[in-house]
Length: 282
Length: 340
Image (tube, rainbow over all chains, first blue to last red; front, side):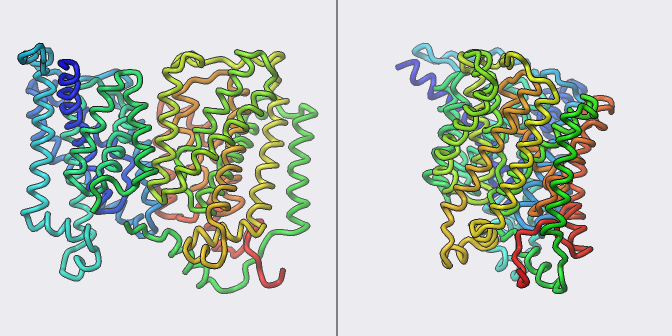
């Protein structure tokens, strides 16, 4: 019994990070209707940003978000308005291939800049654990990342629900033509949406860097997790993203190091085949 | 979910260009193709070419096969796959297992690879054909990743450490060159005749508007299945020959996404949805690859990615596609003109 509860706890903690990995991709999928194959590299850029800044400035990696989030937001707006909006006029397939091109460029640029060495964001509490009754335990690090993930997703939900920009984004997602008639600039909204997606990638990158070691080539793995979360949760649905993250987290914990990823992939293929619109699709 | 219709732009352009399109087709073109093929055979058999040049050429033949098949799927049928490495990996491992574990000839390896790929593609088709557009694209990739993960922890194929091809006697570069050339010629002929046939017409109709095509009697499922399985078989054969030339395989290479990177790059710079595009693209790709390898470490994919993005932005029809539109000609068109 203890083992099962422990697995459940670990699965939930892991699932929150997975949800965070997927939430940016889900937004782009739902709003811009683009499969962003560079999202994994965006996450890894965030991981490098936090890790290296915290080393250089000698601060806790969490504080580096003050720099990485705005920088990546601006980068996202630029990528969308300068590059992707232009190709999207040609249709969804060229846009997909452009993000694919971006992904391979960024992967090798990271390799050139930072070499193939494994990196990790160090925190003083990396080995601390909280002991619970009945032999259960929680790693402090996992709990911190869990809190960051939930907070980010909560802020995003509130932003989309209560601000003018958030409403404009949701309106564009629901009906692009009607939103544009009501005076919403669709191209600008797409730019902001990509900016927000990249900002969440910055936070997700921090989570990745704190929990795991990463390499320039790790982007692909996280992209597939993000994509899995999007597909299982239903695109553009934040509650769906949370549940899907949890399902993926549990699959990973149950499958262990050897079969965790395989089980996740099989689950994803099954899901795509049976209910391609996702569990929580509108 | 709305998926923007990819080909709107192409359709209107083709309609507005109006005037006569010269098709380089028929007897003169056929004669030229036969002459080139014969020359390549003679050069290979007489040993005029140095083994280095043979190696470049055999790479071009294999990439040409792979990208023609990807072009058939994406450019003509609208199935953009990011997971053709599934069949390359399966074929590469079939070759190594047959030659190394069972000490059979490499021909048996190719055959087993092709048979396994046929079976796998038939099973996958049932699942994958339920999806369209980006779902299809990413699902194919997930399948390849799942196989990579599985092979990395499968003891029979020595897990992540990889295996070595053990053909006895090991074929020379000229032998592999001839095999690759033959495969490439057959692949191009299959693509050409498939597109010329009734099936091909149905396929392009289906790519442009699946609902309209099915309403006038195109059996979408059967046509897609045919293309998917044919692509899988040729991709597997090319993969097998590639690993016979390379000599060893490991899961991250065999099932790696970089195979798709190459195919996408070749088709985009050559011209998606043209017969000659993949041929031109493969030649350019192998030249680029060899030249970029001379650069100080790791710039290859950065430059290739930049070229691909610039081509999508400024020459959306690729090099050959743009030339064909500007100069109003087509090499081996699958279109049927009123004169025919």
